[in-house]
Image 1 (cartoon, rainbow, N blue to C red):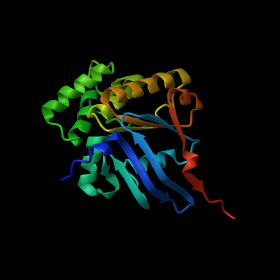
Image 2: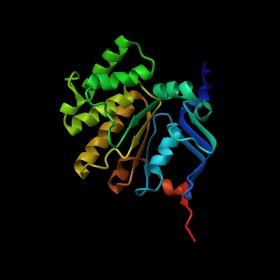
Image 3: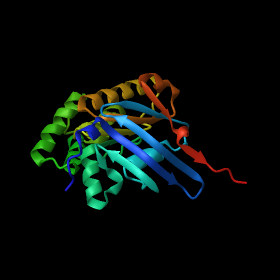
Length: 231
């Protein structure tokens, strides 16, 4: 059973300390110290292939750091394994993918309910909460299969899935990469508003310089990454 973290630790949604990671090809990440405050929203900026997605995967526990600690909501996430890691991820992390990754053949409600099930909510609460969050994001026909929705509506379902469980931290990996500038600004505003309403901190990755003005804190991923040049 996870112990309740100290109150002071909960002032941060995320802390990375001494985190390192490397690929055999020579690409590496080294983060001596990085804090994201509870409710804070930051942009992780960098060119394509610069390591933004890798860093998000490390934070989400989809890749394992070679060393260091990744602390989420006061818990050392790197120390968790197997089912304990999956359960913690379901309760405290929301994820928005560039390709959305919605389950085809399932309704908008069912896509959100799955995330709530992984977060440990009861079946009744899953349905009620899913409908409420979807409605707040403009999806009033939650029974519709996701493939019958417009791209914009599908993105709203993906956002609802990420925030419905009131996570500590939402990670959005290049969520506007396939959108034109106007729709990109609309999408980011939607994600930021939804994360704020859920009380979650937010990390968005993007190579789009137009999004910088939407965030009060921008972190350049090149501060933490390097690539060995072949000789």
